[in-house]
Length: 307
Image (cartoon, rainbow, N blue to C red; front, side, top):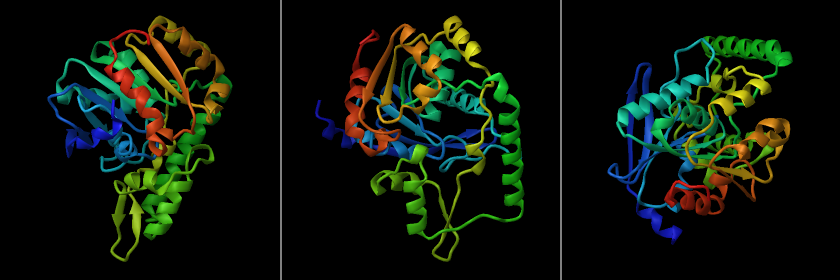
């Protein structure tokens, strides 16, 4: 398949109404085609898939969303901690909105964790799952529970106090582009070509040549399901993923695989789970989409069987 031909996709942006506001969508392709829901990682937005989209087959409708608190989407209600399960609720509202019997779901990082959870909760809705460099929601061991919850609560209160005091930093474009390129997971850096599609969805001009970032700062400190490793493994065995799964791991990001080794080792034991390792770091789908696209495209086009 000639990956370069895919730039013919039409692009359409619109908002999906939800109870707290709206979810912003950047859709690629025709709504008459099979629907693919794409979920980005923390502090990213739908722009994180801009470089990948031209490399994927034209016969799907790619629904790239800004998760709540990111990009052009509404924030969750203020002053309380963000719960990652509410991202799963967001997916349910979106699938209800589009009214399709089946979806393919692609997620990166946090978005992949949400995709794992949604696919297990609503298996009848998901035809295939593609996880980009992510394990399911990380376990929280019993010994870490109090310190973890206290940290999240304290950070949430601190953030709200700063917002109430009007302490919202502004930057010129060069400063904010540099920050976006450098402040990444585990010290990774983005190229300007990878950073700018994200940046342009989360900037608000202040009228003096400067900008503020509209991303909700609370997204850095979400509650995730508080289960330890033993529970996670038992849950995966009791209610496994029921659709074909492709997991693409970046070779240079082995931290999650080492830190949560038991969870990582459980994945290949599940039915119809295909694991691929590619050169690159955590954001390889954005920085080097040509390395990711062939695997994603092959899986999208394949019949539902272990590859």
